[in-house]
Image (cartoon, rainbow, N blue to C red; front, side, top):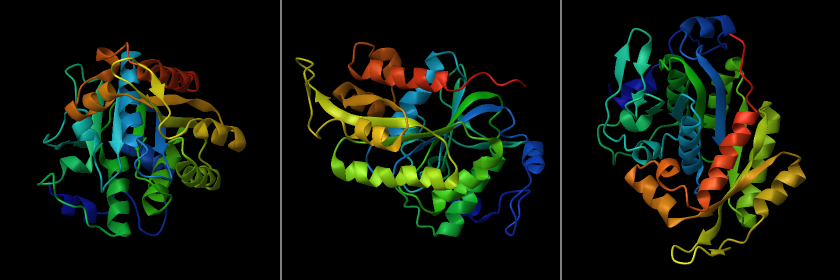
Length: 292
């Protein structure tokens, strides 16, 4: 399956002139078994959205949940590497595309444009309509099956791709968004606009996560605030949304992501571990069981 072909197609069962009815989307069945949908957003690039998406999925998996990750960062699909799933093939079934399962228990599955590229170094040079078409196709044509959570990793910004994602997921009632920032004022200023985007699109904000909140020394475990500290908490307070926690920089977290290892399982002594677990627990608290 070629990326160009996938991107140029219109989502099956949809129209270019009107939004599909909820009943039409439900009949497709591909998101009918998903209990909760969470978007991970930021107005700033390089703040670690993919890191938070990956570790949140792993933490939810260790809490006994079945999790899917939809990677809509079309120009920078890094999650396949973070989960050691590069080079996997996407197959088709009667229900559509089968997501890539990253563990033997099939408790985490993933869909990314990274699986559709013939060459991993190939640049995705697409205009907005083609990107939007693939995002809609990811939502309508991936056979997710039964999931407790679908985590949607997004690119930075508040433009076409974000609106396409929110519009495509809106009929399924997303649980809300995690908004990721780093502590410094430049990042906080950009992320403040992401909160405005959420308000304008009617997307509930589950809370703000401050990533890279200090550097943990691998020798003495002392935490140094390289990028200042507290910007995320202050932003959440001013915006009137929950602050979910601060995740420090940790060489072990970086290494585990580069090698596709399970940080939550392998590094419970890391200072980043309780922060990530606390964020996942707060997400679980916000997601009561739905009645079928």
